[in-house]
Image: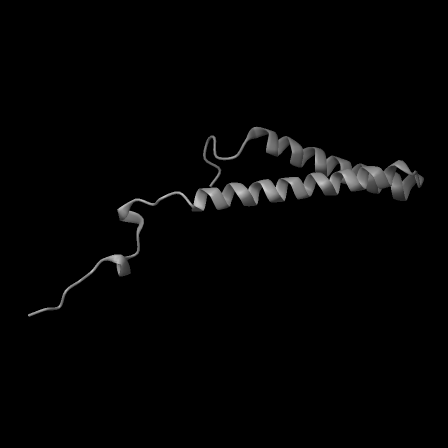
Length: 83
């Protein structure tokens, strides 16, 4: 499904930054009980939502593209049983 050019490269980097932010927030929050951990956690969650919404919109737009006649289901084909 990940064809070349289907999903932008920046989306993968945003996802990586989100994961690093959340892991860092957990480490700083539990390990050192620093206040900055909350900011990193919120940042990571917002970036995660950005990735989810962007992927959803991209998949929705891809599903709206017209399909070729070969991809259409057989029920679209009219068959006459007239004698």
